[in-house]
Structures are given as C-alpha cells and as structure tokens.
Image (tube, rainbow, N blue to C red):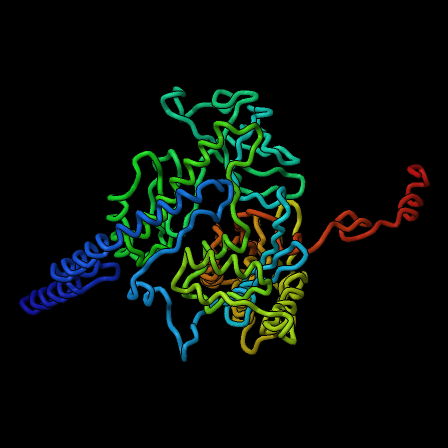
Length: 526
C-alpha cells in the first residue's frame, strides 16, 4: 500500500510541474521601467521639436483647401527624422530595395491598368477608367434626394445624379437616437421621407443593371487612420501585434475627437503620434469642407470624389514590402511620385518612370503580364500536378469545378485526391483574387472519404485566403464535397472589365438554331 501511495504522490508532483510550465498563449513579460522611461522621453522630445512643423503644415493645408471635392488634395509632405525614415524604408541589397511585390501601371487612351506581381506571379489586376464618372464611384460622397421608399424591401432609392438611382438599405441608415424613438426597431419609412435630402457614401459600384449601394455612415480614409464622422466607432486593425495595438490605443486616447469615430489602419505600425495626429487633422478638415459644401449645394451633387485607382492603391497598400512602382506615363508618374512623397516619403523614390520609347518591350510585356492575363481570362486553369480547375460565372454565383485531369498519383486514390485538392485550394484563392470574383462562390472539390482530409482542405483554403485583403467567409466541406463561400463584391470582375456581352447569344454562350426550333413545334411560333 505504501508503494502505491508513493506512486500517486510522484504522479501529482509531476502534474504540478507540467502545469507550471509556460503554455501556448501565455503573455510575454512587460518591458522594464527603464526602457519605458527612455521611449517616453524620446517621444516627448520628438513632440516638442515637431510641433512647430506641424503648425506650418496645417497652415499650408488651409491655403489649399479650396479643392475640397478632390480626394488627393491637402497632403503636405511629412518631415520625418532620419531614424524614422530608415525604419520605413525596409531592406535593401546593393542600394536596391528588396520586396515581395512589384506594381506596374500602364496608361493609354483614357484607360489605366494596374498589375501587382508577387515575385513573377501576377496576383492582382485592375482596370480603371478615370473619365468614367458613372461606373467607378466607390467611396464618393453625394448629396442625394430620396426618390422612393419601399417598406417591403426595407430599402430606399436615392437620386445621386447617376443614370440609375442608388439603393440605401435599412441597415445602412444613420440617425440620431434622440430624434427617433425606439431607434433599434425603427422602420425605414419612419426614418426617410420622400424628397428628403441626405448625405451618403457609395459602398459598392453599380454592376450590370443594379444601381450603386449607399451608406449614411461616411468613412474618409487617410494613410494611417479612417475617420467616421459623427460616429462612436473606435477600433484598431487586428493585423497588428498586441504590443503595437496597446501603443496605438494610448495614442488614440489622447488625440481621438469626441464627436467622430476613428479606425487605425495597418499602415500605422511604428508611426509616431505626430504623424497620426496630422493625418487625423487632415481628415477632419476634409469632412468640415464636405459639410459646408453640402449646405449650399444643389441636389443631387457630388460632395467628395475619391482619387483615381492608382492613388487609392498607393494610399492603401504601398509600403516597404514593395520593391518598386513602375509607371509608363510621364504625367501620371509625376502625380503619383508627388503623392507618394506626401503619404510615404521614406519609400517615395521607389516610384519610377518606365520610358516606353527607350525600351524594346512594353511594360506589361517586359514582366510577362500580358501572358498571365490571357491565362486568367480562360475558363480552364491547369494545376502543377496535371489537375485542372473549371471556373464558370453566372448572375447568381460562381462555380469552380476541381478535376484530377492528368494527375494519376503514385500510391492510393485518397492520397492522390487529397494532394490534388490541396493544390486546387491554393490556386483557387489565387484566381479569386486575380479575377476579382465576388459574391457567392461554390467549389466542387473531388470527393474524399476521410473527414480528416476534408478538414485539411478546408483549412488550407482559409489559410490561402488570408493573403486576400478582400473580406471572405468559408464554410466547411459538405457531404457532397462542396464548399460554400462568399467574397465581398465591390466592382466588376476582371473578365467584365475586358469583355462585352455577345450580341449574338446575349451572354448565354451558345446560339440557338431558330429554324430547327421552329421545325420541332410544327412551325407554330414562326
């Protein structure tokens, strides 16, 4: 009996030792007081030395505030310290920047194409028509008039000056709780009246026969923060590490305006309080300009225009991970270079001009973009092992079919299917991003017998989609081997930007033999 007691005591002591070991998810020890004191002292010095510069920049911004409709106005260059500039530049080798991405911009005949390469692989492509004020209006702020309220649809149609009225749904309304009783359950016909003037922002471009989608919750994007006027929204990007989130939260507690909401972007990592404050100040002044213009503007009117796509991409994505931006149009290059110097001065020299007259190949041919674009427009995509994907888009949803094709494997059927599906999951994430496919997507993976393998494939797809900045939602593989997922749709896809509907088949993909059809019913419907 004594031996058994001794064994039990040994087991308990070993368990206690295991419990005392550090576990996954345990927080790291906080920095010591000395390091905190040093960092705070340096920050205070930085604040005092740059306060005067900030005042000068604000005065300069006030002088150029007349162009309040344009989205790229009012960005004065940031005066950063040498240490801050070096931190932002990223790694270099032999004087040349090292980065995962390369951005190529080709402009011709009123059309601008933007291609983003990861290594040599094309991952994103956009077509912009700067002269088109009707199709590319995402982010624009309008003063509109309510034309019709549909209680059964919980939506209202608003005239914003576009050929088709925009739609505003009940969930996108914004009103003061004091003005409307029981605001949580208020109906749209109670909040909006016919011919009422409203300020709203476009959240989705018009697509096909559908008008643009609106929201009364306006958001103005800066380099480091997003301002949400007259809102209580407060947040910090989840992509940032916890330590950085805590630092930024302390900064926001000091500079956040009481009457507006604010969201801190991923680009704010390592950014000083002075820079964030200046970015926020610009956005507040921008909103004040929009508000003052709305009071005297006619209905409908454009209050604020988002900058062209290339400027938006520089603002949203351009960082030290880009080894360069190449632009083959001199005028556009000068504009982008000046804009980059204002929002990302440390890496503005990575914006370069590609002289078509001196180069043997065009920009897109030089980096094999044309070749990859042609493949992305095809319905069939080959996988490295010999399998294939068939991508078909309809009005309701997009269907992706996974086939083994030439992939016959070398061991068992289950292992062959699993390897093929894993390849397909990686390529599907790439194709959805490249083709800019949005809405409902159904993926028909090859059937797998083991539930464990199904989970592996589903998790692999989710992991691959993490590199996509567009919001996605993926469900588990069903018993039929289908995966249902959604990807946020903002504008038209890649194929729609390059192609028009066929006049002969009306987009159906085949032409009916009218003679044969009429002959089959005895000629009744001639």
